[in-house]
Amino acid sequence: MNSNEYKIETLELKNCNEIIEIWTKSLPENLKSIIGKEIINNYIQKFFKIKENFGCGIFKSNELIGFILFGKDNIIIEEIKKEKFKLIIFSFFKNLFLLKLNKILNYLDVLIFLLLSKNEEKIMMEGNCELLIIAIKNDQQNKGIGSDLLRDSLKIFKKNFLNYNYIYVKTLNRSERNLHFYKRNKFEVQKSIFGRVYLKFKT
Image (cartoon, rainbow, N blue to C red; front, top):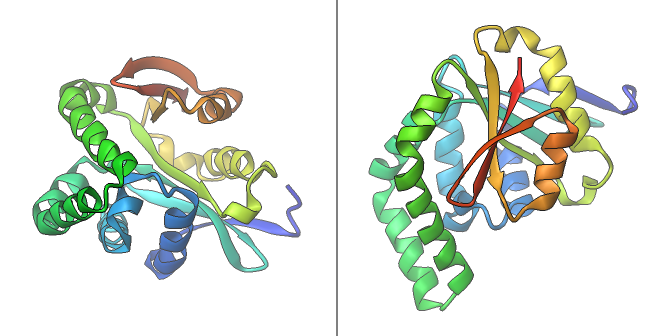
């Protein structure tokens, strides 16, 4: 990465709108993207209120072109499910009415996964940190920017991980490209739960 062209900095709430745009456009199959920007905005607002959570962004000419979020979001997810229940249900039935079967299957897939993984994930994440999401603008992908962002974030902000044994990430087992991405960046496969593969990185 050309350090004169790109820079990595911590993210703040002021970057919220840019994060939302990158999230929805680069990860259209992500359930939060399917439900809509209101959910993502709510998630980000809550995310930055948790002291241990933090995000890094990669900037090109002062434009955010990618981001990565680390921390824990189990409390955030529970709060969103309660506060935005009507919105989530409305989105589900809207997609059902429009016969968008792929999106309906996504809802059901996530629901089953959450039910099956809750206890195991709680044990796994005890004393550890999670790489919650990484996203790069569509027109900046396939340039190695994601790997640069991940590696440099772990290096530059190493002090943020001192209290953790491992950094975990989970990805769909059908996403071979994503699995290869994390393996290439020294994450090791830990286990699989309902189509998700958990990988870990020793801090």
